[in-house]
Length: 391
Image 1 (cartoon, rainbow, N blue to C red):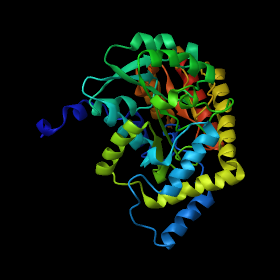
Image 2: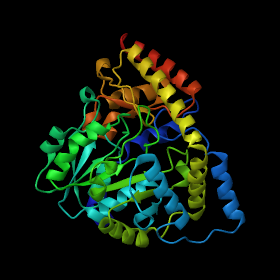
Image 3: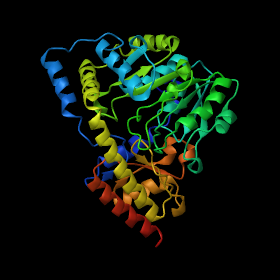
Image 4: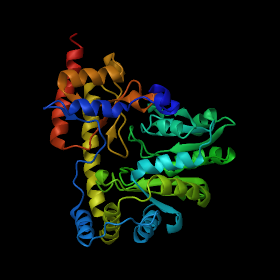
């Protein structure tokens, strides 16, 4: 039956994250630092709004774009929190940020178009470009420049076929951010080559150093930027599968048509929950979000300090909830290190190669888990690294 399988789908590699997650499920005492999922429970006022919507019998389809009240609150949120101009008529509620990524790439990619993808990067970007008919082109970001995109590296990767660039900060898997000045430095290259920007800002609220800056808030960039965001990380709502995308009218129109035929609408109960998340947030200054962010920052400092004490060079994350230590000094690459650590100490981390070739000598460790489990995981990793020197 292989002859029936689409060649693009057949060429994809299985997710490097899910492989380790599946193995962990079979180990009783395993600790997973693999999947990027908040360990916090969705705040009660959000859950309560969902329950009340069900009790009222609000279980029908919504309009394809999503509830008008939710879209209005999203636009207010993006303007007040991140200075990003957007309008409800060009805001689309999606099934998580993942659908939004797929939508924009399918909306803009023609066969042969090249999309610049920063590496290391979220595992879905390159497969999504491929499935949309485009060609992903890596732009390597390195430890020595704090994993940021630089004008020089972008310029080097551009060809006449380049159509768009993905900008994803705070970054998964490195925890890097880009400041206003660093974003401004890449804008001339983007404008010179007339590129579309796809800005994935799902971790925007989890910025530890200063305040998140969206490239869409700078200069005239909102006219050429698609902004993707959602509720999964900031509001501990991963399982609710609710995100959104704000785009220039022409691209929004194309995404909307694909969404209409493929999804119809995001789950209504999740839309009511998301509306409550924003409305309550406006009232209390998003205090719950800030509390979770501050706890993640504390855990991140603990984890990175522990890695550096073990002799693993590790960049101090400035956002998201991941640490990305280099394991090169152990004599192992990320794949070998992760496999051995899981087998011998039952601690799951993700090989950096899952996020592109630039991550080959790294592993990603999510600290979106309890401080108690992080402490045990660090103890086991310390024992593992010590044992390497005795072999």
